[in-house]
Length: 312
Length: 202
Picture: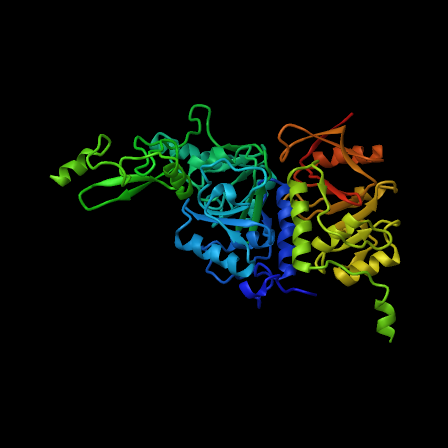
């Protein structure tokens, strides 16, 4: 069968389109169709070895390779950033093996592969979000045997997960799980949303875009169809809530995005900055300014007292 | 010479294996994740006697030597089985309980659907997908669909869908997470019903 890509000059032509062979893609595609039909259920698939180590997104890359077509535009983020090693290398991988357009703009992408964040900008119906997942089984740290966790999912036996959250409350006074916070999908399956901060959990609920999850080492695929009910597990007297910050983004001044803390020196100075780089730069382009932006005067009204002290 | 005489009747498959199968898969993925929404078949392909274009495209994109295909009496023509064996390499079975993909026409005897594998409680993914060939798919308000993938409701009308199908489908929905997913294939259009979809028939 004809397997050459349309523009061999620009592409790694010794490989099939998007690296994987057609039979492997069909196998992954069949798993994806089952995954969207059973939201939150982990479909086993015959994960292949990819030219990158486990933990670098081999599951997400295989899902993207099965989904991506020549007309797609790919964005890859790692902890929200487009410019980290993992994101850059995966973007280059598909630019090379599939000759697709890539972008850093959330709005321009048709497929967004992500490691541990959901973009701040609301996703649309014509976009697909592909998650890289290290441990797909939310019950794995409570019950190491796959045979048992399968049974627990089959019987909808999720008491153990609630005990774990309760023990958090007993020990810390609140639910101390801050990332990979378990969710209930369409009132049936408990699902691991991958190690995204719990800040992102509400975005998964009723999202307009299709969400696909790939775990390469564990060889599991699962999915959330658009407009699916996703509820973070909690208790009536300890309702689910997301993180909030007293600080704002030092670059764009955002108060409602997920912030990374950056240590500036060994004198205790630090700043907060948006984890979503595209969101932050879009806000800066629109004229929003945070206290540490280079446009801002030094020692402006917003600069923190410790940095003034250090300057003296 | 013998070889030539056997292959001369064969119809061609996808023009471009990678791109065409991807385009068909994307439509199936969209259709399955948005049950009841109607999509156009994105490519041109010749269908063998017994199958229509959309069902042929779906099988060529999704079936291979790892998937067993069951064809209904009306679909199981010589041309169709030869076509699938050549292009997909799929084993063809006469036992519906072995099927990964089952293909039938909507005006046929649908009693076989009760035998299709629905998966197990621990592995609900080990179930069949039914590809049902239909005359036309429209969004008339014959069926109201709700469930994952559907914002409020989707309207769907499948021309000539027998009452027996709805009775089976209601039972199938109660088996969740087990169950059979359905792909409706008219000559040019595709829509799907995931096992999660709740249907209200007018």
